[in-house]
Length: 224
Image (cartoon, rainbow, N blue to C red; front, side, top):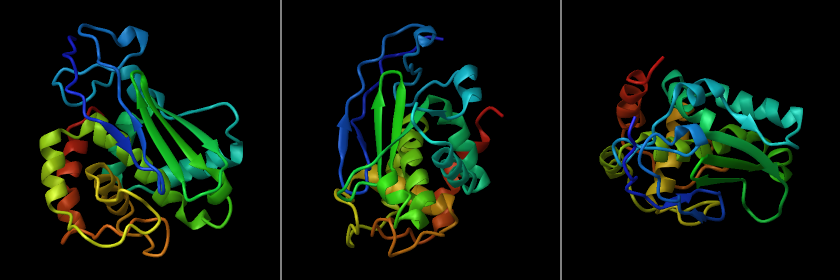
């Protein structure tokens, strides 16, 4: 399938305390999937082949069996519609871990062959164990946002999220990307996000179910 040049959106991914900016290289036209590069047919979302769709998350060398277990358990907590969206993109994701100070709990970055999601085990295996699912689903929300959600839908979803309020543990929580990922995690967890935990201070839409309805519809249009 021919992939048009992606109308690149700046990939500005949430990190719960820091923002990493990574601009994807322009995607070549034509069938470039054989060399692993992301392609697009609509100039907005990413084409996902059967191989990537079936692959699931890849863990980087050095990720312990214990960390793999809680990361996968966090993914498994997502509501069915969110789980379908995650299953569509997880074959594009390499998961890693790091240990650092500061307030960073997770880092997501995009590149021309997919995405990396890294979790700060210094905190998530320590005093932020209770935030694991929120952080995992927030970071995967960024991948879903870039790969699957058309810009027009993203605009409609953002219009439903109130502005104002504290950022909590995060900076740049007024960014559209952060607002989507934060609300996606809340929706995916059926609202089970602690106000005093890793969740942003971004206000909840008037109806979290109404906000997520278009994402649920999108999930059911995906290949099984």
